[in-house]
Every structure is written in structure tokens, then in C-alpha cells.
Image (tube, rainbow, N blue to C red):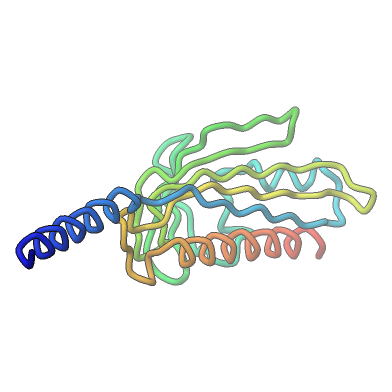
Length: 174
């Protein structure tokens, strides 16, 4: 009887271990959606947003931009490190620009991949600028360290979007 209980216990433990690995999974997509009202007309705001090589002129987290070609830029961050981004879409009619992370640098930004879309729309006070980002945390394993988990990625991308929008506003409302 003792041997049977022991075997059942080991079998149960095995099932528990196996089932826990079934429920473990990699990262889930995260998102950030921020917007700001800028007291400037859509054309002026769009001109700044659409200048892919000029992000450093209005984003306070960006030290400099180095263009590799017409659609690829290396963004040097003031906190250190560089990220490489690729322009996906620039739609003047919709006042929409979209780009993606091309080369990750998890020390500079704790994400493994992102896409960002910025859209400018008319608003009663001038322009509404919407910043949407979709991304994955830096550590794509099942048990990421705290500095590379979903919360760290969401915080970093939210801070980046908010500071960018605030910088854009400040540059246009002089």
C-alpha cells in the first residue's frame, strides 16, 4: 500500500510540474495610447511629426538622430544607448506616420520590438496628436527579471510617449 501511495504521489507531482509548464508562456503584446492637444494648426504639427530625421528637435529624450538612409534612423538617447528604427508609413492625407524598432537595445529601451504610430487631427483648440505604440517586453522568456518584464516595458514606452508629446507641444507653442 505504501508503494502505491508513493507511486501515486510521484505521478501527481509529475502532472503538476508538466501542467505548470503548459501554462507558462512568453510575452503578450503590450500597448500605450497617449494623446495631447497642441495649440497649433494641423499643418505645422504634421510638418514636425513627419520629419523622420528631426525627432531630436522636439523629443526631450532624444540626443541626436543619424540617418542611415531615407527610411532608417539611429536614435541616440540622452540616457545612453542607441536604437535603430525604420519608417513604415508616412501618409500626408491622414497626417499619420508609423515606424518600428529595427534593432533592439534592451539597455536603452526595455523592449524587444515595437511599432509606433503618430497621428495629427484637427481639434477645436488646434491639433490633437495621438501616439500609439505596440510592443513586447525585453526578456521574451517565461520568467523575466523585473527590469525587463511587462511592467518595465509599459513604463518605459509610456514615459517615452508622454515626454515626446510634451516636447512636441513645447516646440510648437513657443
